[in-house]
Amino acid sequence: MSRIPWWAWVLGALALVVGIIALVGGFATSPQKELPVVEIGETFTGGELAASVDSVYVTNVNPDTGLIDATVDYLVVETTVENVTRNPSAFSDSVLRVAVDGAIEETTPPTSILDTSRGLRTTYVQPDVPVALSYVWTVDAAAIPAGTTIYLGLFDQFRVYGDPIFGDGAYTRPTVVAKLSTEISDVRTEEVVSE
Amino acid sequence: MNRLRIIAAVIAFLAIAGIAVGTAPTTDDDVVAPFAVRGGLGDTLETRVLTVTALDVARASSLDVSYFEGLGTYPEKLTTDSNWIVVTVRLTATIEPVSLSNARLRIGDSEFRASEFLPRPAITDLLAGPGIAAVGSLAFEVSDAALASDGAESAELTFPTQFTTQLDEIATVELDLRDIDSVPDYRVEKAVIVDGEK
Image (cartoon, rainbow over all chains, first blue to last red; front, side):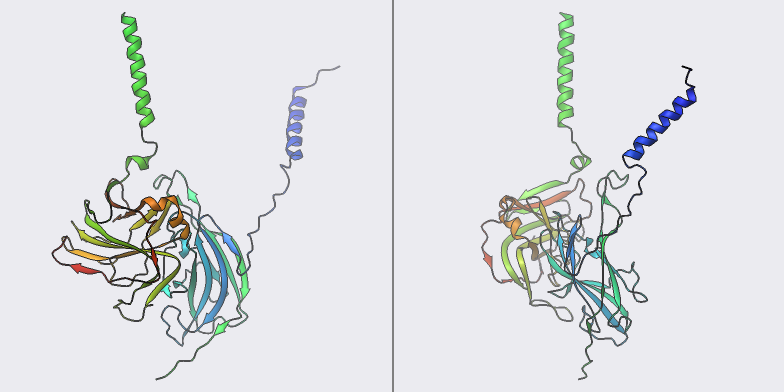
């Protein structure tokens, strides 16, 4: 039996390693993870807030002031939000963004966030106290007619540990974690009442 | 004999070192934690930046805030499916005007922030100057679960006046929220300056 050359040992070992990796699926194509799609009324629970989109409508009445400006409309997204942590959360200002072709960029923050039942602006969501919030975007009048598709993203943020400045108290930038889309079917138009 | 002394000294040194290590703060938070100035309902608590007294505590499912004096309209009632805990406080700043908008109510491991919904003039946006006392209410929207928890017996109302509270004094009012009867409607009074009183 002739002596096996050293390079054959190396090639053999390499083939063995590659074979084992292939066997356990190391070369399989990693499936691209799709964002979860939620439905209207379905709750998505993130690390800080659980949120559901309950309804979407367009109105010409400013939900914040009750006034009508003929040049603008308002896209209103009604949600239910619950803080699932043990501390007050201000993340409600980032948990939802919308995109409407030609009307609202996905990075545009809402013009106002209102406590729906009280009609008051709000920032903090208290732990274990569910609240109905209306997210309002101001758009040009008639920019969102009935039938327009609106894309909605639900966002979350993640704690960063060992940050050189903030230690364990830092968070990542808000990241989209679920999405849904719907067509606008509810367009409310009120006439200006002259006195 | 000398050897015994050395062995005893080494053991003593190791014991002391063990105690030092065992009792050392485990996180930076422990090292720079604020100092709580504690008291109960009716006690006057003096800290570096304010003097505060919790005068009264109430529980309700609706707040009557018809005192609103600003422009425009405001709801006369603030209802909730949870609970309102309303604490009336007397506040005097000592160095510079302070805000109570960061006031927190801690019940067990849950922490609630003073509600933003009380209309002006509220104690949360009243910035009275040093030495000028003001009286007003703080409202906290609190879950049923928190009030039913064991922590409701030893709730803490704290008054951090700055974003960073490290090594600062924090007035801390200890409250027993278990036996407070809930009223359907609680009338909140507007915050007022109380001239000449601390």
